[in-house]
Length: 417
Ligand SMILES: Cc1cc2nc3c(=O)[nH]c(=O)nc-3n(C[C@H](O)[C@H](O)[C@H](O)COP(=O)(O)OP(=O)(O)OC[C@H]3O[C@@H](n4cnc5c(N)ncnc54)[C@H](O)[C@@H]3O)c2cc1C
Image (cartoon, rainbow, N blue to C red; front, side, top):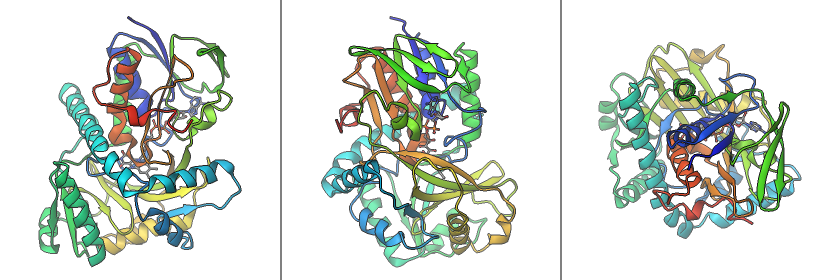
């Protein structure tokens, strides 16, 4: 049955949801408070599709590592100390989720989500041409220390245990994979199933496909209120008046928890700020995307441009740029790639985006149990691009009252209620 659907949020998750819901015959409208169609976390990110990321952010050792990093202004992780019940509650849940047992349970689900999403991207590329710069040539996890390489080798073993190829390479073999750029590393792990794309092109392509399918995107439309009657949402109060539909899907990224305040839903979420810098014409370009393992910095070639990005700063919904963290990213790149220096990045405007982070590192996907016509798709943290299409596909199945093609019971949005 065709339903009217309002999707709140025009990031990669919202647009993917709108695309698949429209493909199932629903009458979809997307609303976004953004001033322009090129803003937000889904644009300046590193564009990596990462089946290799089957370990959620909440993992053993992360709390201790985070506490050590806290005191270094250039470190990849930072929590701005503040008296916030939301932050304290989130931190406690993160700590509870950081067990080997939980990670072992999450890993096969994350693998399946990433692989299903990758298949969606392949399908889009086959049908639309490679408009959005999809490169399926893998990812290098570069390690500068023996300890780092040992840790990554253990992760590679886990990946193989989950049926995904992962090759541990010495410095010579690493250089063979990336002949155009000198690297100062002890070795690497190569994940051939990972891929990368150009996020801005992906977003423009999705916006174009939605326009072609007759799905309007209403920009500068901020949802401020949810109107309810009993167990149903009856409308949305926006700065442009009230909107009504049969179904509502919340895809408001890091703002999702704030957007549903007043609805009585418990959706623990922290914004994880990250930065990126893009060299439009880099002097030297890698062929593959890479993660600088010890520094937690992502490096992606994007059709002649080079993007580097990193840091996870829990500082609330704050989009100011901290120059020390940006310096930390640039310094890390120069350590791993001696051909790239701080001078290459002089004058480059840093970009920042807020990742929507759930405490257990898993997205929120599915219908709310409190409101029968409200669904949620958010909380993808560092994996929103990688998991965007599969999230959209699953949400379209949920909206159509079909059995989702993957078991998303563990992702239910009210798991903390
Ligand atoms: C530096 C960096 C690098 C990254 N690299 C990668 C990567 O390589 N691979 C990967 O998979 N992921 C990566 N990510 C993460 C990825 O970018 C995010 O997970 C993803 O963009 C989140 O998409 P989203 O649609 O959930 O949210 P968003 O893109 O933030 O979209 C949410 C939208 O909701 C709108 N909105 C919010 N509140 C309201 C309201 N009240 N009313 C109306 N509209 C509203 C906002 O304006 C926004 O447009 C990276 C992130 C960063 C910061």
